[in-house]
Length: 470
Image (tube, rainbow, N blue to C red; front, top):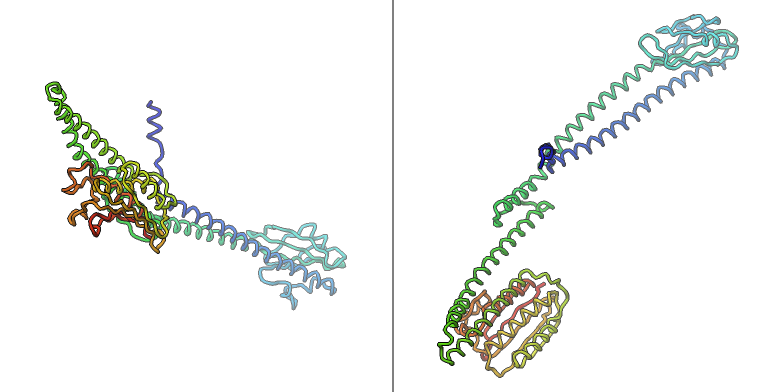
């Protein structure tokens, strides 16, 4: 990487944390809403105030025009000393009276400017004629002025209303609105940061736990997450996932250890017999035949052991999709295959609803192991091997069992026959690896059931598994 590339990497901005992103987003949304509401509220209030002020002024001017049209009035009638003058001088309204020539007869407070248009109105013969001036500066204030003719060239009356104080009021309102919006935005940012810290605290714990697992590769870390919301559910799911991964890792470790232990014996025997092959010419014919037979038997046992190890590993990580299966049909298929292999009579009995959800390949493998186990331990028997498939009244729970008339299993071995590589004392002389029933247990557990083994009345064994349970 060149120098420019290193500089770009070094200057790359750090990504914002979820907490900061949440707080900034909360503050931004609140700010946008606050600004929008503040602007709309101020605009509406300012519009209402201005419209109200204008409507009041327009009403005063209209009342004046109606008055001079109805009565023949002179400038003296609107003098500040004349009675009734307050009728045209409401609050914040200034009145100034002009003579026929446009001169000021009674000045306003403050005095209003008189222009040529106002003098023309004063000399107008039609009562109620009006001229209006907007945004007139009078001193430091802004006024709106209307000049109304008295008619007959008798003069005019100027009515003015101050608007600058209204604008000052609106400006003060605007400043207060901006200050309030700024305070709300700051408060929203602080509240958003507190809320984000509270919400993401458990996510930070989960992140730390995940980083610890990635760094230390230890799956036994306890995830201290509580609550029943989505974060709590995520924490419990993560904890269960770590537990299952730890169990899977332990199962794989034990499988490798047990497989290595079991493979060591046949491999040692093979090496011993192979070393004898170097002196095969020196051995008598009977010994040669016995040596070749031993090699063939050990090769078969080793092949069977490897196949069963593969089956066991496949059972733990089977990706076969579950589907609706009928265990009675699977039992018929297994029985037919066993008849051809062993020549033994296999009887299948089914009762009740024997359908369930499961993986047909795994279930067939488990049932085949049970039948092969029965035929192996009852090699010289004449009684048929029985397969019973029973579906109880509870939907989904199906019981599968294989019955034989072999030597049976002693009580001490009944609870251990499903352990990996375990073989009873009286079965160690028979071929096999001790993995067949372990595969049955793995398949049963994968389908929500459990294996079982009991002594059969009259001799023999009843061994099988259940599928489903709810």
